[in-house]
Amino acid sequence: MLWAGDQIAAWDKTFGYPSAITSGISSGLSGYANWTPDILSDSPDIELWKRWVQFAAFTPIMRDHLWENEPTSVDIWFNEKTPKYFRRYADIHMQLVPYIQKHLAAYRSNGVPLVRHMMLEFPDEPETYDCEYQYMFGPKYLIAPVVEKGAKRKKVYFPKGQWRSFWDAGSTIKSTGQWITVNAPLDVIPVYERIAVDR
Image 1 (cartoon, rainbow, N blue to C red):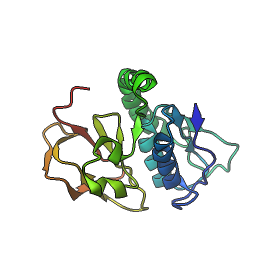
Image 2: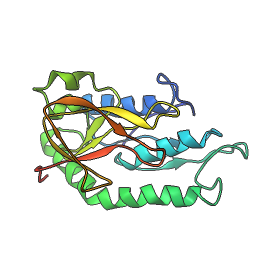
Image 3: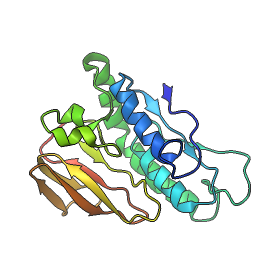
Image 4: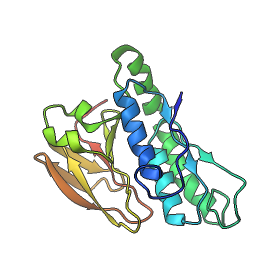
């Protein structure tokens, strides 16, 4: 298991939460499939904690990193709502465990990581080469974590094909290979399922 290292509890793209996302993508490009970040619970910023929890649910292992922190630091036990919030995403992660296990097992024979840079799955689409804060989770799910404080929308590159919202099966996008800005309210990470991929 490769660990993402110690980020700081901040929105900083070099050392904070966003750097955990690029760590996972880079680790996949380096040949590591079994990679995991911490959910760093060392900040009073509940928005930061929520976005980190969302992202961690769509990684091979989801874990909170509790510290001996100030009482103002948000973690899973911060208030009566945070355990419920964590459980919501932990339940999603557990539902994905068979899918995760399947593709980690496949990695042993094909060398393709679970957390994939977009260009690994779509090498014929040059726009994917510049996708820094989104990735494929196996061949089926496009994950686009929100990395800007206060953001409620996210610009996402959708490769050619049809994509269904993970959260609303009736919401689909037919892409010709284009950047599309999607809604990303505080409690929701943009996740899309690749239609017609039975893998």
